[in-house]
Length: 354
Image 1 (cartoon, helix red, strand yellow):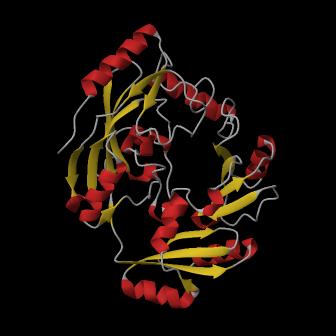
Image 2 (cartoon, helix red, strand yellow):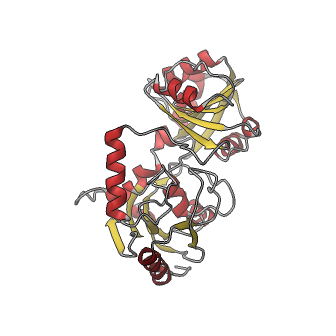
Image 3 (spheres, rainbow, N blue to C red):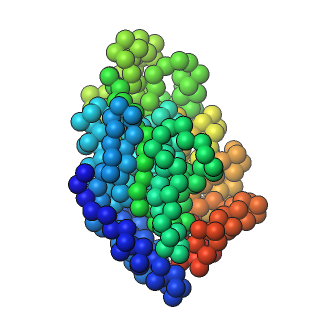
C-alpha cells in the first residue's frame, strides 16, 4: 500500500549513534512529547516512514509502519466497519501508530475492549545497535517464545525504534448510545461498580464531578434493554463527549495545574487529596488536577494498591512515573542493557538511568 520504507536510513542513523555513544531522541508526530521525563538527545525523526503494509479485514489484523498517521489507519478501518478497540487518544493531528504503541495510552474503552498491549500481535524494530529485529506475528494465537512485542508497549522508545506494528482490530458495534445522570462521587463509584457486576453492554463509564456518563455498545436489542434497566438521560452528542474526554478537550482539562493520572481499584473510595478529579475507566483511572506534593499523591494511590503518574505539567526533570520496587527496577535495567547496551535510545524518558 502507499507510503515509504525508511528502514535502511534509520538503521544507519542508529548504528552510527551506537558507535559514537550519542543519545538519540526518537520523534514521530510530536503529539506526546509532553509525556514522560524531559526528552534529550539528537533528534531521530521517523517522518516519512509510513504506509499500511497489510490489512486483512476478514482476519481482523492490520500492519503498518510506525509513522503512519493514526487518523489514516482509523479511516481505513472505519470503511470496513472496524476499529482499534483500545480507542487511542491522538492529542493532535500528527499522532502516529508508533507513538500510540510506544506511549501505551488507551482511551475510555480500555476496561471493556482491552489495553494497547492486548492488541499488539507483532513488531519490527531497531535495537540500540541498529539491528533489525522482529517479534510476534500477524495471527492472534502466536505463542512461540517470549511476548517481546507487547513489551514494547509503553516503553517510550527506550528499548527500540519501532519500525512496524501489527494490531488486532475488532468490528464496530451495531449501536452505541450514551446515558447521563446526576450523581455524587460516592454514588458514581457505587453505580459503576454495580453495573460492572451485571451482563450489560457497557463500553465506557466516567464521572466528571457533576454527571455520571455510561456508554452502551452492541446489538440494538441488548442496548435497548440495558438502557431501560439503567435509566438516565440520553446524551445527544454521546460520541462527541467521549472524544472530548479521550483527547483531553473536556472542560475539566482546561487548567494549567499539574495533571496526574492515578490507576486504582475501581471500587476505591474518593481519595482525600486537594484538587479536582475526573473518573474514567469505570473508576479505575482517575485524573487529578492538583498542586499537592508528588509524595502525597503517590502515597494516596499506593494506599489503594494503585500508582500515580505525573501526566502533564510540573517538573519533568525528576521522576514522573511511580517509583519502581527494587526487583522491578532491576528487571527494567536488565532489559535496557539487552536491547540498548550503550543506553542511547530515549535515555531517561521513563526513569533516570533507563
